[in-house]
Length: 312
Image (cartoon, rainbow, N blue to C red; front, side):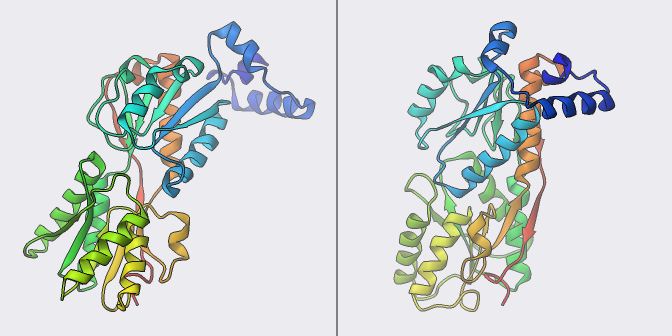
């Protein structure tokens, strides 16, 4: 029974199913404290993200919790407010002594002390020794959605959301590649200088842009869906139609994107697959499996979801 409870790899599927059925019938619950005292493990992992108010990270947390449950792990969630100093406090504080490993969406650059922990980086960060990374190919994702806007006939396409983060840099690079390959002229760019990407900041920036420009862009590629939703509202409040006057597209496919007015064209990452791969790599790191050591960059799938914000 203990081999099944502790997810020992070398148990046949038939035997695992029979034992699990008996455990379920008996209503067995793991005593994590006792297991931790015996094995030196707690049965908990930490998920550290900038904010749960951002719908993307809330959805990611749900996927991670489901994936961890497959390994009989529980997840402790901590937020950093997108502040490097809070991230440092979290990673060097008591949380890391309560968990077996950490899944981290880094605020900026390699996080201090992360190389000493069993850890996996979610999303983008410069390489960190012994910390694999899992995420989508942001250059390819951005290039895909910008190419869709080009295929819709748009030429004056604004890139919105550029800032000093690795994710923004990669998404701008995808935009640049698509525009260059289409031999479209000077790039149009609107930086985002207000900290974490948000609909409120986007509404303010795009409204200001539309007020001061006699000729609006034909399309806006927003670096995430929250920015896109702020842009949608600003465009409508300016008396313009989407997509008739200005088309809008984003990345993330957060839940509200299917129900906005009009529904938002976006890139949908496979968050469940991302979480499965990340948790699996973290379990390998916790168990000390040789394949888990060294830098690994694992890319997970995404797809373009075309909706009414780009196609009437």
